[in-house]
Length: 486
Ligand SMILES: C[S@@+](CC[C@H](N)C(=O)[O-])C[C@H]1O[C@@H](n2cnc3c(N)ncnc32)[C@H](O)[C@@H]1O
Image 1 (tube, rainbow, N blue to C red):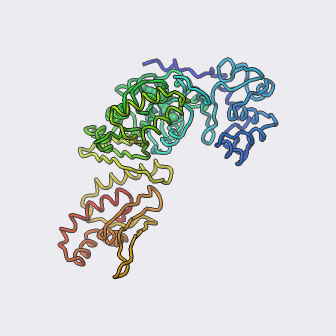
Image 2: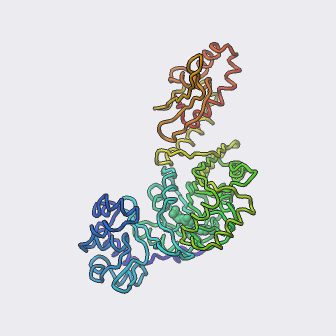
Image 3: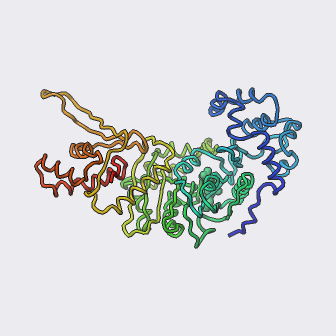
């Protein structure tokens, strides 16, 4: 483990202060940039069309210069940059560089969130082996899926530019961030310092730098990309074959979490011929004693998958690499790759709940709130005693969709679906018993009374009905179709 002080920001304390002052006084924040360039230029920028941005920043006041340098990737005249930033200091620090015709950004300095700045490497051409990734789609997915409740200690494993640590700083008393890459830690240190935050930064492989320590919350957007286990880019490749790195994170989680602690991480997993992907992933948490909710959000075929990750690092023109990667998939009978989110909780029970399931539908953000509510419902189910003694009501906006065909005797219902219209937006096929049961859940009578009425109506013994209905109710509560009224 390297000492914390090794991971110095790109600028000393005075330089950080001068840079922060320059960015702040120019109004270089997400809101400031959006207001300056306007919605049309913002939308065009998402399509890599810079024309409107350059038009909106033609008058080179400090904000315009910052936008042209860091958002537009332009070469700007010395005089304009000197008016906006401490030029000599930023050239020395490697944040700006001199080029023919003026000054360009040497790193990305992105306004993020309400009033944060994030430092990362530039993109736009082949990426270096130690490229430090900026805030991307996966960063946003993990940030959105994290439960944002106050905690004492939080760990960001594989911090990169420090984006997850920034979010953790909003609700954790102490933030530790680790990375195997020295360059990433220097960038994270710069992000922290620029935002006036104090993180413990440690270097090393996965949990090695925090061995023997526990955290209330752990988040990780690890180098989850699956393949032969060769490392060409540290942000993407773990150096472990297949999906080993994600299995390893599950295995270390029990020793990393405090009692009641939660870990969220993004993961990829292999779909291997003849093996159920969900069984494979459930195997990662078997024996850990942790509650686990693992959701598969996307599935990709091998060719699309490899092409995506090669182009992510601007490697698409390397047919040999493509072939080697696909050969590895063939040899290991990989038919597809799943992408999803793993949430683990150390609840200290002998009978942990492990669910591995598809959740491919769009859900209402932030996902973290839905995940917190899912674990709260598990707690309720665990402590509720007999489900028959409780009253239930249907979720707000719950809908029943019917598919029917018309025949000689009129309409015949073929399929009935319960559908949540918000939150996790589950939709699932149900049988007439569930339709009747759910229809009676108005919160006024215990499930036991509902079962008595239903049993009499269908002329079946109530105990026989209860045996079937109770696990169904547990499932409907877990997914949020039914809410607890008592
Ligand atoms: C996909 S990036 C995530 C960056 C950032 N946390 C985010 O959410 O955008 C993965 C990070 O993990 C780091 N990393 C790669 N291999 C690692 C390892 N074996 N142990 C710790 N960190 C590692 C990389 O340097 C990189 O910063």
